[in-house]
Structures are given as structure tokens and as C-alpha cells.
Length: 97
Picture 1 (cartoon, rainbow, N blue to C red):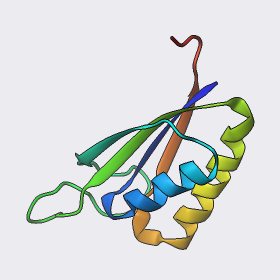
Picture 2 (cartoon, rainbow, N blue to C red):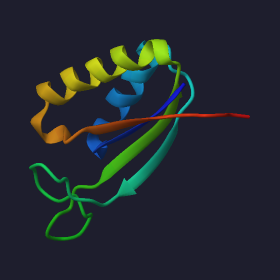
Picture 3 (cartoon, rainbow, N blue to C red):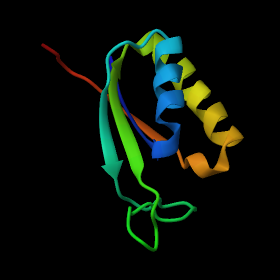
Picture 4 (cartoon, one colour):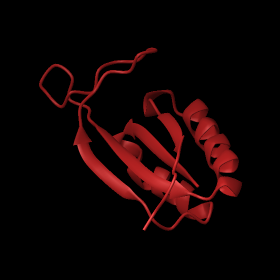
């Protein structure tokens, strides 16, 4: 099992949630109204008068067999929407309850 953390422009929340659901991923946690600045390109998302956009983030635990497809679908979504600013990371889950 893998943890997948996804950060993205808040305007795309419904699309990201639908992408997960379309991949059979039911459970997730969403953090709303997060600020940040990416390390690659794009503008800061700080929720202030100068940089009004904010981010959301999702954390979901994914069966190993579904991780590659979810990441590929996220890549496609990010490529189709330059303002999405999507970043995703995975790490191994050793145990769960």
C-alpha cells in the first residue's frame, strides 16, 4: 500500500476527487485553503491580496496495483491545465489499522 499526497489549485478540487473515484479510490482526506509556492514554476498560492489563489491537498492510501494509473491520470490532468499546479508524491505504508 502507498500513501499518495496531491497538492493542487483549489479550483480543481472536484476534478481531482472525481479522478480518484474514477480509479476506484473511495477514501481520502482533503486539506482546504493551503498556501504555498512550488519549487519548479508557477505563481505562489498564498490567499492574500497579492497572490489570492490557494491550494487544496489530498492524502489517500492506495493499493499498489492502482498507484501507477492514478499517477498517470494526474499527469494527464496537470498537462491539460497549466494553472492546476499539481504535484503528487508517494511513500510506502508499513502498517495500518
